[in-house]
Length: 255
Image 1 (cartoon, rainbow, N blue to C red):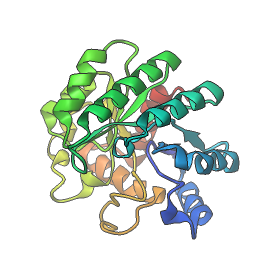
Image 2: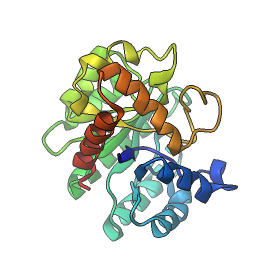
Image 3: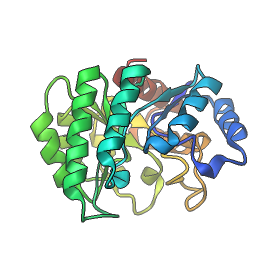
Image 4: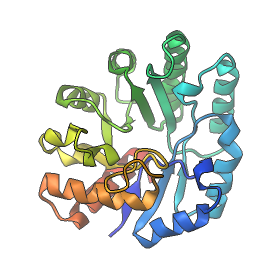
């Protein structure tokens, strides 16, 4: 069985004491591919080092996270473009809009989101969307940019069925992580009505650890708990869910 974690922040400071041991635990649990989203330029060197250390397992994204869209966002976007010009990346992400932490700079976030979508189109790679309290704002831009050259993953999907169907209509897979194991997560109520061809697995480690680790540091090995929950939801074996979701991820990222 091979499992793919489509969204894990392996470079996070949360792993500075045991990064290699944490990654080895995941490898031992059959998680063989890790797709690593960017936040801003301050993490670039850490990400490149991870790729050097695990060339068969780590696949990088380039991008500016919406909560890091600050006064210098144009310089950060220039860095993203320079990285895409000089290095192979598998997606532009994570990008999008976050109105949970900051409602004052929506215009900056919208501009950065549009710009990075167009970079992804230019390089023929997917986008990985971060959306928090901003479904309407994200969908408005996806509607503007929709087309065969727009595709990717709606990371950490926590919306309702209607929002799930709309995300899929824009060529987005749904990134399902620890929230699906939460009693109040709600997405488990309708997920079996979404074709599993639209689903990929993720952890968002070190955040959003699944039950029974909720509230603790997440790590990629815990994706097995997400896999087990989806196996129950879809009435498929864990091996089947692993195979299908890994195939879905490979199609998106071109691996």
